[in-house]
Length: 132
Length: 133
Image 1: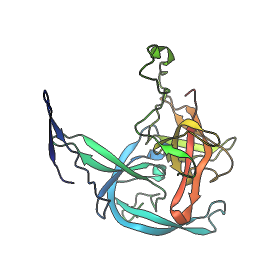
Image 2: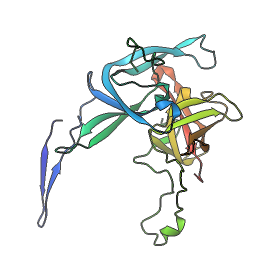
Image 3: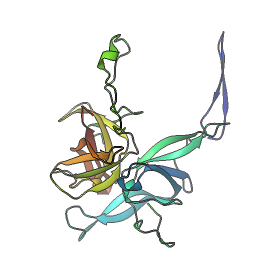
Image 4: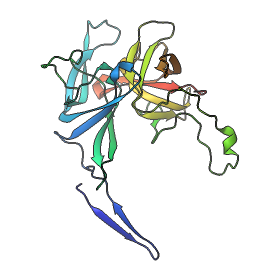
């Protein structure tokens, strides 16, 4: 939903309501998303952002209590490419679609999910895989 | 999440129980937050470890939840990733944050209200916040 202006009139008061610029459509590829958390359990959290790559992805993750020797298919994952750095501490972090209040610099957030897996984020090499 | 009985909460709630607007003496139920006491919210970084254990997992609190019905209901909790637990559904973990002085503060425990159903894309657990936190 693009920017829309609503007018509500009553007998005594007129309100100008500005709608949020967050899509009311289901998320789609290339849509920006952000997660808040991380920094390896340190004292401060940080916002990191990226964009949706793909929906309904099946990934293989270590099967619990097998010491990483067995893997299991984990389905219906949304894969995201993070443009900012992130770390393993983002596991479980809430994921938002960011929006902006019209004529304001303030960011608003529409909650959409939770980080369930991160990939190859353990170093800061240039060629690191930044997908979640 | 319906099977687990966990409900999502809007907004944040850490610190105090909800006080009815009709209660005129609500101030008597509020306690001043101690200096350096960490505040919990979705996005707070936490550490988890098996009670009595030494291996720490660093994770982030997800959305706020509560469980009204069923076994072991609670009013204040947060979703965490399943892999933030020492075990998916068994055992017990304590969750802690660090205060302004770098000291660990135990804020809750991981409860058995999570879900691990990989073929449905579910792998989460819940940290129940201590009632006196």
